[in-house]
Length: 387
Image (cartoon, rainbow, N blue to C red; front, side, top):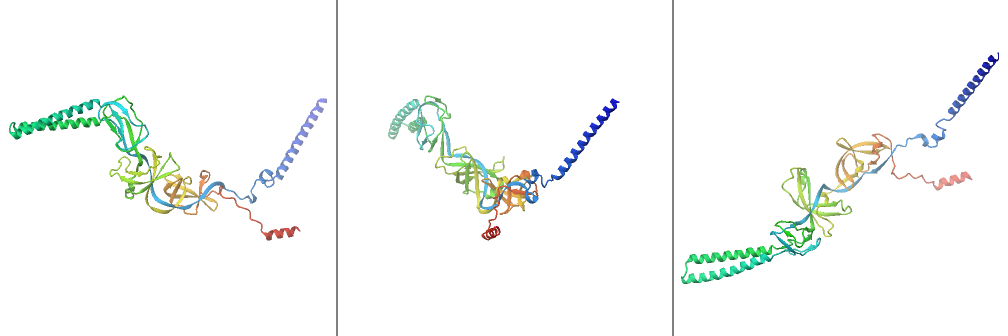
């Protein structure tokens, strides 16, 4: 009997627990029904009024027209107007170096002297022999007029005189080659020899560069051959000096095309009065081929490729419209649009990866809309109503 009482008490306790759980579930369901998305503080507080979609934030700019001359863009290298590596024509030992590295020198200045003691001795010997042969010839000529010697003897004396004159000229020329002079005005480079060095024929001593003006060598595709001619103006910019540009003109066009790239090889000249330009610098060249024209320009970052074509996103009625464009010249971070976009259109410059054709967009860098000002009449109505 006591066992039956315990079983009955346990069954009653289980029934009470089930009842309490059912009441809790019912109460939770009722509370969830009362908290709707409209009155939920987590949703309602941040939801936009009216539930209108805001669109994906992008950056955009208005397309503008600009004056742009027709130009061909190319890259090239700066070259000295004149350049030479000074080398001796005869072997010898350096006795004097008469320049400082990096200095400007005029044309004809003596730069290097080689030991010329042997050459001077050869000159003295040749001159003495020349004097002797001249005396012999004069005596032979006098004897021939008196008939004491034959014409052959006189001719031999004359020939010996001419040989002696030639030897004197050779020795004098060899002596002058012991001095190395500047062939043109320019700037001396870095020497590779010192006083006392023995140099051979043709050994490098120092380079000499004429830096004002400079030359620019560059290439353009052969399809532009009809648009290029000598005398055309151009503009040169350097990555090493990005805040400045230099104007120049075309000197000559090589009649032989570069077979490896099928390109015209062009040489231009650029003034360099301040000496900032240096031979060997990498140069970006704009060769102006025609007069100024009106062009539609957009930032380069607006473009994105699809296959071989170029596209932009225009903002039309709050939506992105993918548009194929044809491009022309590139200039200072902008690109010319030949077709597809017109002046007054708005193109996306940042955020293209987040959108597709037809996506609702919001221009993040547009100026914020200002709230309409309350007029004096409205203020009077409000104050009257409050009173």
